[in-house]
Length: 266
Length: 136
Image (cartoon, rainbow over all chains, first blue to last red; front, side):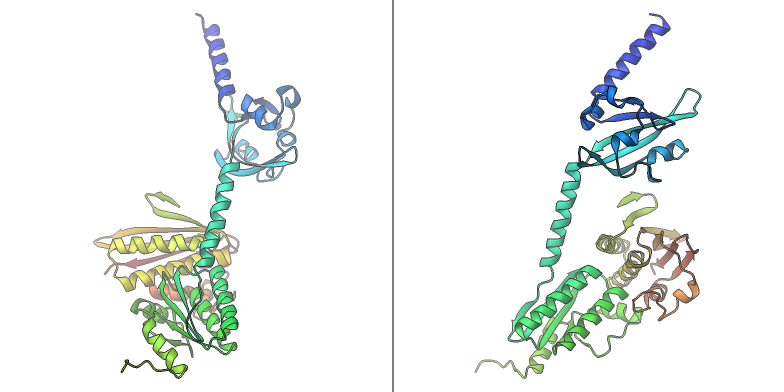
């Protein structure tokens, strides 16, 4: 077997492998015109080599990165490192979410003559992600329950991390529940809150102010030693908002406000 | 979340990212031996920094790691963002200054809670805040 023959067999084998890989692979020259695509690529695009040969790749892929500075193919041709990013391609009016990796195509001398790209259809993954997002939203919604503790006394236990979205939700839940139950006292228990930064404190203050406007007293309970020290270090004054170390104390205060008394049975 | 020799690296772009960071920070602080109050305090400072990225910088990263200096060990948080940068660092780190709608206590409280706090920023080049807390 001489050297040229050896070369030919290798080329054939390599082409065969490329065509049988189920991931679409394509290559373009420096003018961004298609010089290669494997079978999986034709399948994804529903086309054949005759129809796309030497066409500019943006005409074929019609992706959201095409002909914008976001095009990673152009970036790697300009010498940047190979990278993987998400994108969307539109084919027969259907949008397919994909992830593609672009690498510079170099000749034997090592100079860049074009680019190689392989892409993965991530429709399923994006669907899963969407589902996950919806689920976390649901969890968030059920994680802010305003519970009636006594006649006209409500409690809202806050657990986990409070972000602006959740704070808004807490505010809505509370104000609506105050309206519905004509509550006079609402206890905001923050014992389970993972961290209190100035944004969280700001939200708590706003919630307390809003409830007050509705004629309802807001008591913040669950101020543990750690929370107390953090609030002091943050330099936050809770002003007129009543606070308590424990939920029990808060409830006892609530009873006082309501002119109720808990006595042992005679 | 990425993990490398530099510690845990988190991408920050939306409010829900903050939760993961706070939980990881608390876990790390617990393992390092900080008491409960310190854990809470430092986690709150970390939360402050990541909330700041979301509020002002829009996109960035938070890196949490354990550091050593001679025989001391400490906790370090690095907050990087690609936002507009802080035009007047001195002013931003003062109490009651706010360019947004916050309480104006954010950065100054981070400085108070942590032992060391370094802010690097240039207009148009984002901001990098490195804060350290040593375990006594």
